[in-house]
Length: 276
Image 1 (cartoon, rainbow, N blue to C red):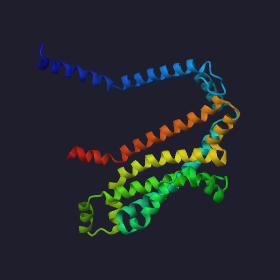
Image 2 (cartoon, one colour):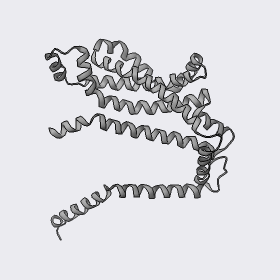
Image 3 (cartoon, rainbow, N blue to C red):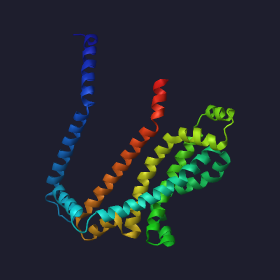
Image 4 (cartoon, rainbow, N blue to C red):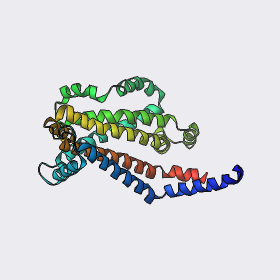
């Protein structure tokens, strides 16, 4: 059999394999098997290790059940973390999106603000913790301030990039129909910047969630971050892993929610490309 004769057969085989791997049942089946293997390996390797250093998944699962159903539960620390996250991100988005769009739309404003935005963006949030503690103490305001700072800067940078990348023909078309600056911003600049804003949103929300944990571990000693420290100080490793897993689950949900929302909000772009 020649190579030329075998090529179509090989391509057909690869295509069948690709179609099989594209099936949701196959994908989730592979993920489930991988998860089982990882948990089994973790259980075996953790068995001989001192429980103060590491805990097997069976003990972690028991700790999750305990924290979910008995006092003290994980729900109040989770609520504290989500409250600080929600308030801080709402304030950050409310301020960041308009500032970013205005910076991208008006060059003079960008020249003034861009150096300071860049300066603040390169500073790790944890470096601002002592300053925020001096300003706000160990209250909820301290956590909100750190989340606000973590949210604001990525949103400003990405919204400004989105506004700068709007095609001039669209803006000129709006002006040709005597649209005001506000109308151009609302009907042209903002919709065209949505993909950039959501790209920044994913970064901002992830950074904000990290900011919540950092604030609660370094100052407030409350919420999920405080629960981690409390368990670590008493060498209860299984209990310590419960809030860590809660942080991971919330982070994954945030990432998935922003991706889902982006697909819904920008569906018009997909329809536009399909029509083209």
